[in-house]
Image (cartoon, rainbow, N blue to C red; front, side):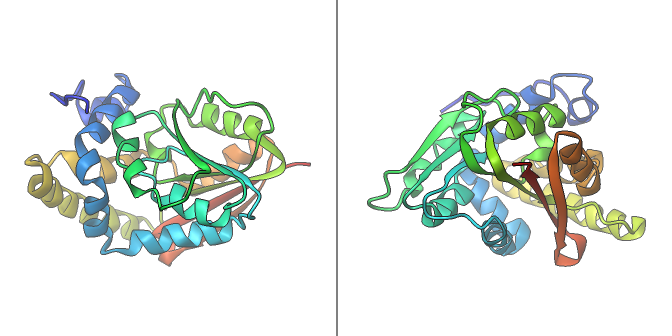
Length: 248
């Protein structure tokens, strides 16, 4: 387990890219890894499981598919995907080894087609056109360079392969957007203090939501990278599902 000391910079500096954003994100997730799943359960009142199930349903994963779960964290989506691609291969990839250490203990008995690989989402160690699906859940706001990630996803997908991204949405109504983020700020501060003795720990979520350009911007980035795109929004604009289909 990595020893987690003081953050390498302030959150504001990281989100403005005044400092190395990846270093700050690495520090944060190494810190929260042991209680990450519990934090998700509390902050979403258990709804995060339903949103993840919905993503896997939308992705139409077949039994023989090869799937990459990008920025897999503790493997919640990786193991969901494995149930669908039970004759194929599933790889969970994350830049943070501390998070992935909490994924392996979730391995169901007899499941041997899942592996975990430490990798930077913007520089993937996988061959061109080698995956049928790529999934990514609640991670995009932490990427220092989204266009580089989209380019890598496009590279590793097979012709007609699909990329599915789930993240917090940016509601088009500014008042609702502001109320939504303020609630996340208050609840995140309370949760960070309760679980980690530091209210700043979960302030990353509302702060990164504010800095995130949103699902419509990502849809445009996917189109620029050569994807055919469709935007799915659910849960009263609280969650956004972005789909990118690689041209055949």
